[in-house]
Amino acid sequence: MAEKKRDPYFDNAKFLLMILVVFGHMMQPFIENEQWNHDLYYTIFAFHMPAFIFISGFFAKSFDPQKKAPVATNFQKFIVPYIFFQWLYSLFNRLSGAEEHFTFQLDVPNWSLWFLISSFFWQISLYFFRRIRPTAGITISILISLLVGYTPFIGRELTLQRTAVFLPFFIIGYYLPKGFFDWFKNFKYKKLFAVGFVVIYALVNYLNEVNKYMFFGSKPYDDYLNFPEWGFLVRIVTFMLAIIGMLAFFSLVPTRETSYTKEGKYTLIAYLLHGFFIRGMRAFDLENIHLGFPGFIVLALASILLTTVLASEPVGKVYNKIERYFLGNKNKNKPTYNES
Image (cartoon, one colour):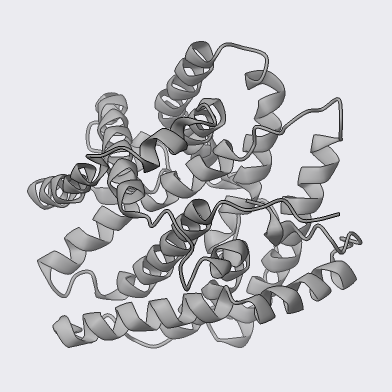
């Protein structure tokens, strides 16, 4: 059976977003070097994960518990790899000297692995959201995102705080009509949305004294705000900035096939593997190095190179073999990385 034709627009978007993920993680040790490093870092974090999550929701429209078993399917797709990589990262942290002892726990994800657990919960939430109207579903998801910050007992465990915080982006993507991007890609003035990047950067710079942890969504308001009672307003601002950044980003994504379109197919692999390189890099005392603009360019080029290698077809095929052997995915024609 022929593989369903992929839309190059979304593969382009995922690859470019993956570069931003890698670049942001590479930049982190140096964000206090210069003010513009700091502002650029948080400008990227304002929208790049919301955009990824939005795309995941957009491609979750096929969710149908009558035709397949979503819980088992998504457990295989997200939780089984999570357990494997959680163990692998724990071992890596011990061998690299980041931790004195080997510690393996499933309730608190290692670094970027939170996305796997959250993806499982977002998919399962469609049991509920598929049954209600889009206006009601989006409203409920936003209310959950705003209110979860007031629950100090919901934090990093099972990444429940982040799952709730970013839920609206997944639900908006799920409800968005399939034809929206056909219209958006052909919208004559769409590139004007790119001004949104300037707006976000300027606001991040203006709010220099505000705790930027608001962009990560992993902690309750009380953990990072001096006045947590106003946390819902802070979350509304971050939500609006994410929407502005997403529109700016999607307005610049090439609509036709490019030299990197094929790599967009394997971004989950790059996401899972890039952490080993970043954590290895951070094992050195980098905070005292003044990066400067030349170093910034080197980091940008290194991010592009690393993403290109990790999202390449050979790496994807090797991962597919490992996945089938160790993680139990026996369907050769449907590896988890191959889904949008």
